[in-house]
Image (tube, rainbow, N blue to C red; front, side, top):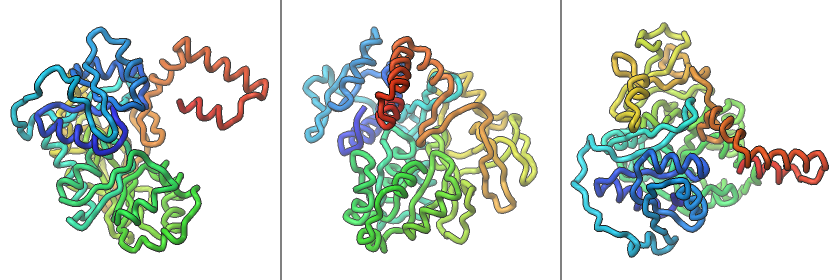
Length: 394
């Protein structure tokens, strides 16, 4: 559980290369969900930096069988002195489990998605062919490494294509364009929320004028509103490629072509490296333009859900296509337009949030008491709006 940076990247890649199953914990999930994830995943060691140490302790306090906590220092990496055993595993094979990543669904409890070495590399390859990555490319990664977008699109895409990766510790609108200029980045992958932040930030004409080397920006993890898409391209003079990716497919699923004349605003694009269809739960494909579930088949698809064989069975059609749970339509050119969800799921800033998770959180007595105090302070006009918003986000 680390912020972005060299230590997180080395543990992510080194752990998998060493034959271990790696879990990158999401600190935004909170102590309760984190405790569930650590217990359910049967994690043996938890690498934590200073900024997440308190949260880790809160989560570990809920467990009887605790993973060993290993401090990570920003400059020196993990404190290996506290490690109580020698680490040694067999050399991994393509079909071995490599990554365990938890994603919120509609059940209220996150499900552990198992990706193999092969599925992760194919996710990177799908990124490479969709965006025509070469050795000359360099991507700016500002999304957290605990998300499949950063793990596969930015990291695996760079590895597979042999291109470069620039990874600051977190997104900062004030430094975004200077990072691209100074580090000679040729593309980035973000979520629509970040595009909104950049739209609302002050525009540095001098920096923008130095983006001649830049090829395209990539938007994923949530639908990109056509109005924001057009406004961003108009303001910065850059091409934004709308895509679709989910955890279970190692991120890349659909992408608009790089050629701006072939973009269809409001569409997540066409399939690259995997097959996509619109069909019902039994696998019956519908006619062009008809709405049904978006389904995918490819070597980038997950192995299954960890310790949940029933959910794994339900996630696939009888002919082995993965059911995304998203509703959509396909036009005559093969472009997919997302129209909704089969089940209730909230997407906020690229994060999947179950409505049941929200209900469970609000039913917590401590949370209810805090909300009551906020309400009283609002009534008394003592609480500034921005402070309220900050507290609600927390």
